[in-house]
Length: 419
Ligand code: GLC
Image (cartoon, rainbow, N blue to C red; front, side, top):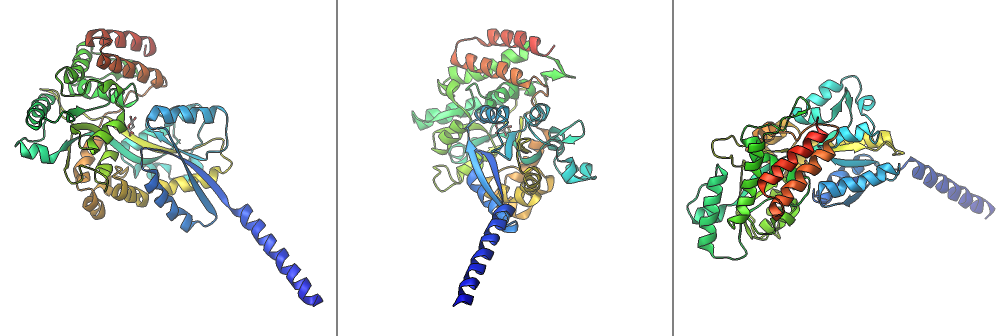
């Protein structure tokens, strides 16, 4: 009896010690994922990590439907030196800024001596965006670029090929809209709200005319091309090809409206495709995707997007978080996200992987688009540059500025920021 009791006590004590040591060995990582980039699918990828690393538990936090909304949230956390987030997904335009603010930690120690070789595995644009003064400040989560999505069924019905120029797109949209007589059908949806995506809206035709915005860190503004770019987008509204309140449309609005069957052509990023193929999509198997049209006489141009994993400088689990990020940024996870969420791979070879091309056949032709996509200006004052461009695009589309006034104001304001 006595023996039994002491045995029970002993066992209970041992169990307590075990629980206590299990608890102390457990690392909880809190990871911020943008809400439009399929946190449901990332969850499955992170489950794989937990299965391989039983002492690590990964919790996802999501938020913000646009790049700015997310940045605003993260800025608050970082400014408060809040330790609650360990890992955060960052738009490709931000890793350099976060590193400069001291908000993220470099990966060089955990990667070791061969950092160069390690980074060379990624598409060059992403190796570059994440390396600042030899420091690896984040690791790529996925690549991105803008494409033209279209309704295959409707173009076939009217015997129209996917357009190669914006003029061809206008003509095609008018023809289909006239024929369909559907008051809910928009010819073209794009991002006109004053969000980060509207910077790309402005740059697409501007770049297509062969112009650059910044050269060697200095503003290289072409007023005429800027007027033409703004006038082209406003023209879509004036001709009834785009809806009147396009100035209220953000990226995921375009995606939702196209997915509901209300849009013929849509300018959007890669993530949209996976959603269009979902069970609840009205356009499943009716979607074509090609590179964006060019302005007449110009070259097609796309905007380089993408998202990167950064580890918070205020995390209490930096080393574990970095190991986790190495996994989340691996070819294995890239393939998984390509197949299950149509997020573009940050590794060249994943584009032609047999399982990937089976799930997302157009990825094989997406690689050259990503590789030739242009980067938004790289400058420490990018936030101001972005704000100037997107608010101008928005004002022109809302009709509060003409394209000429918009271009003039844009140039003046940009000159003050990018001397
Ligand atoms: C996409 C891109 C990102 C871009 C954003 C703009 O998510 O990947 O780089 O800034 O859209 O809305």
